[in-house]
Image 1: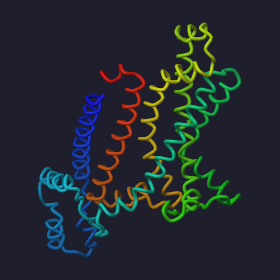
Image 2 (image 1 turned 120 degrees about the vertical axis):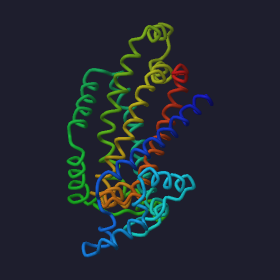
Image 3 (image 1 turned 135 degrees about the vertical axis):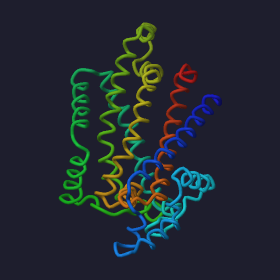
Length: 313
C-alpha cells in the first residue's frame, strides 16, 4: 500500500509541475498590457516600460516561470499586481469558504448517491425507474437554472435561507449552516444524479454474479449480502466517478459563489482572471490542482483497499 501511495503522490507532483508550467505559458500569450492597466491609459511609454521592468514582464517567459517556481516552492506566491494584497493571505481567507462547500457537497453526494443507487439496484421496478428519472433530470437541467429556481423558492418566496452572504463556521454554526445550505443543495443535485446512476449500474451488475447466487443459496440474509459483499465490489467504479465529480464541482463553485455572493475562491477566480493578475491566478491553479490530486489520492486509496488488484494497475 505504501508503494501504491508513493506512486500516486509522485504522479501528482509531476502533474502539478506540468499544469503550472502550461498555465504560466498560456497566461503569458495574451497581450493584456498589465502595466498600462495599472497605470491608466494616460501613462507614457516610458512609465509603462518601467512598470513592466518592475513586474519582471520584460524578461523571457521561461525565466519568469522559474523565478515564480522558486518562490512558490518556499510558499511565497507574491502579491497581487492590482490590489497589492498578499496572495497567500488572500487564499487563506477565501479557501475555507470554498472548502466548506466542496466537503459538504462531496459528503452529501456520497451518502445520497449510495443510498439511492443501492435502493434502485436492489428493489428495481418502480423504484428503479424513479431513480433513473431523477438522474436524467439532474443531468438535463442546467446548473444555473437549478440554482436560480432554488434561490427564488427557498430564499425569495419562502425566506427560509438568506439569498446572499456568508457567515464563518467559527463565528456562528447556525449562521454558517444557513448560509451554505442553498449553495450546497444547488451543487449536490447534479452530482447525486451522476454518481447514483453509477452505483445503481454497479450494484445490478454485481448482483448478477455467480458468487451472489451462492451466498443466497447458503442462506445469508439479503441485507448482509448487499452490505457485506455486493456494496464492497460495486463501490470502486462509483468512487472513481465521485472523484471526477469533485473536479466538476470546482467549476460549478465559480457560478454558485457569484450568485450567492460567497467570498470564496470561485468568485476570486473570476475577479482576478479577467485582469490577468498572474500571481493570483497561478496560486489559484496550484491550490486547485493540489485539491484535485488529494481527492483523487483518497479515492485511489479507497479503491485499492476495496480491490487490491487496483494497487498494481
